[in-house]
Length: 278
Image 1: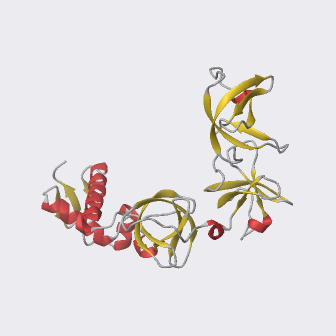
Image 2: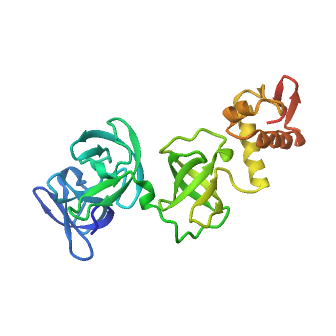
Image 3: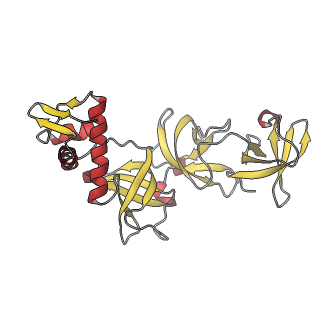
């Protein structure tokens, strides 16, 4: 039974303090009364998160934490003292980030991307903001075009760095960003290239002309419908205005308009674009 992980355990016996749960190896952990549902019966299986309480005793909870062992998350600092920064992990107990694991001194009320690990000396869960120390550069089994889950954690001169599938390092270049992206944001992305150094170039839209056109066309059409069949934007509009309004490049926008025009869904006039068919 690993500290910091969610387990499926069986209800083994009850006490005044709660219900003791057991794993396949016979290890027990207490689920306090506050988390025991009246419908729970001995022999039932239940999913619980196991951690050390404030007295360093293993304890179970049915509350889903904001972060688990060996994973990344975007968390808020709730307190700072001599030991380090304490982050809200969704439980009564907070998650310590020692000063040695802070590349920049953390402040109360601020949010940071961190990795959860087990302190080898104390067996307590701690967190680290040294993100690159916990990202793999080997064992990548993606192919170009694959959809992946990303968590953005740092801006750079090249673009936005992301954690890919909770394991690898990815980058979306500025030239491929046509929408606002914030640190800590999670979304889907697509593999554009896998570099020899084990880093992954990403794009936020599917690769290939057909996918880009279909996605952009649908987005433009939906925007027209939301604005009652008219907006002022045309293929002559300023690229920055298009990027801010539609979250896409002018090139993708022009192709979307062309696709809709060929299907006679829109009419292009000097003062804007009109919807002719819904």
